[in-house]
Image (cartoon, rainbow, N blue to C red):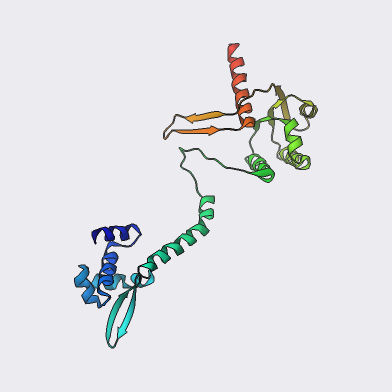
Length: 236
């Protein structure tokens, strides 16, 4: 019985309510006075949470003449209640996730998927109102993404008067864009390609985090940063 009581408590049922429910299961039907004697829970306490027991579907009331009896619901009803609660949780989880803020000492990551997601990420970045420092592969970008939408993003950045300092892969499209740097609030410099497919990012600040990324495009950009810093420091 003690084990059953513990398990009912783990399901979110208060200890006193669980004791009364177990007593009611054993007795079939009983008065509040009988349940108080059987469960060891004071009669006044049972009256205090009687409505909760009924709303939880653990017991129902049975009136016989002037007497009130409590009847335990079939234990299968507990499973039904859990399923219903799970359904409700599933409906609100997306909204809860959307407002969830990680603690300040943990990385904050947003995931964007597809072309619509990429342009949404661009727009969110520009909404910060800060100068942009980036790495671009214009040859790949203009063959993969909608040129009209890319130009719309460019117009938006110019409208917001945000300067873009760009390290770009050398190529025909990149060199053509570089000729328009001044008019488009951009400064472009070219770097050579570096190949790879994995990078590990580690934070040694508590609570300590590590992120393993396997993406050739991202890794090429990060390796380029390393190469530039390595070359610069070698001259000092």
